[in-house]
Length: 310
Image 1 (cartoon, helix red, strand yellow):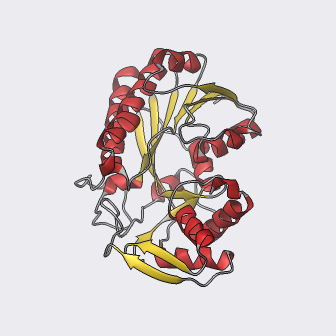
Image 2: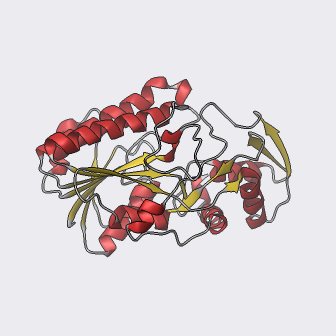
Image 3: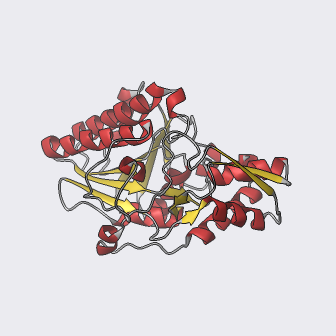
């Protein structure tokens, strides 16, 4: 791996990945439409930044792909909660966009294609921790459905076009440059009114998370031996939303009154338990180094130190 392209490289995970790839001596090119990505995240990256859209700028995408040996396709719509308000968005931004990137990669002779999938594809799982080879259940969110569809397209490209595809099914990721999800939602609420916090769901939803540093190490170090392969990524633990709320409030020095709505889940597609089996990634030499509690607290500290993100 020497010359790399990161789609969505101005985003949370992508910009952290870009920084680390530059540190280890890679030539990094970023392709991003900056709809959610931020130029502030790239101020220290020393990357070649190309502004473009994966749906509308396919010629520019192919140009950005020239000379690349490894593609990290991270660009996506990741708003699970809002999916049913914009049902076309997941199909276009997560499926058609992935098809465009795969086609450009195949035409330009890219060797490795690294894809950010999601643990949401397991829906209402019945086996915990959930392994990669479990039968894929009925999808509970448009986001999860779009990611499993994208995996299917990439498996076909791996077979027919000889791309070497590594798909990572993430839990939610935390850490510096985090800008979307429950941690920043809670910080925003408490910054507005330190006396109260409202949680969607009953607070007992059990979720696994991982720190972006652990995520980036996996993206760089783990590869499919050939063809198409899938790896779960996450910590071997979970925390409740209530626990996360307490950690966030403690960093902010607050003790708010907490209210709830929505029953055992906060929205359509909110799974009450997410815990992935990461033994396959461990066999590849990877393991998490940060606990969920330290990851949550690190994220809150970064947000408070960079309150422009609010």
